[in-house]
Length: 119
Length: 110
Image 1: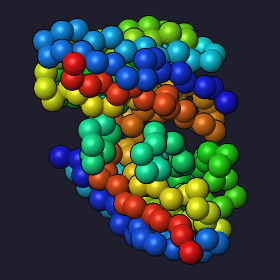
Image 2 (image 1 turned 135 degrees about the vertical axis):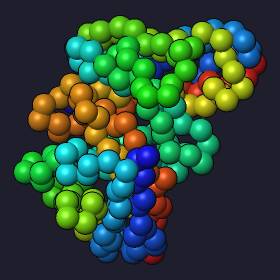
Image 3 (image 1 turned 180 degrees about the horizontal axis):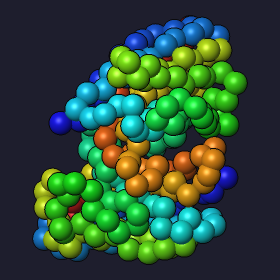
């Protein structure tokens, strides 16, 4: 069965950096695009970033462009999100999600990892 | 940016009754529309993709319809486990500079 397990969340000061990881299993990781989605406390879902199956193309929401970098290591079945210049408004639960076979919907999600940006 | 608007914000329905949730796109997204269910403290779960195709393991009481800018999620006979928040999401943009979600509809017990 598909499993996605995020890690790396925590408390960081404004302007700081954090790297999230998402360990994937139960499917051929190297064949699927992957997403990061976040959810601020008590708020709705916000798509953050997408990376193609082979890492050749990466796309970002305007709110994180230039600060966040999505990457993947297909040899380790792991997805990453490097977050720099963090702001209070980046405080959220960050989910990794697998892209669907027939389009860029998100067919499996991890349990999420909480990032808190606070001084 | 394509804006997704869900209505109503909160829907109160009795168990066993039908629930109808709406999602409108600010411009056409064709059939590139998905629905997700989220329960408190849990990750979202995919229900519907391609506007009307049920995801693996999703009960037949969930159905999706629509295309272009108007979409509907219908739950034919509400079970206790269906009370949750529902989000629509468009994935029509290419390249995907923004896969926007609606703000959500909270389905609560009447």
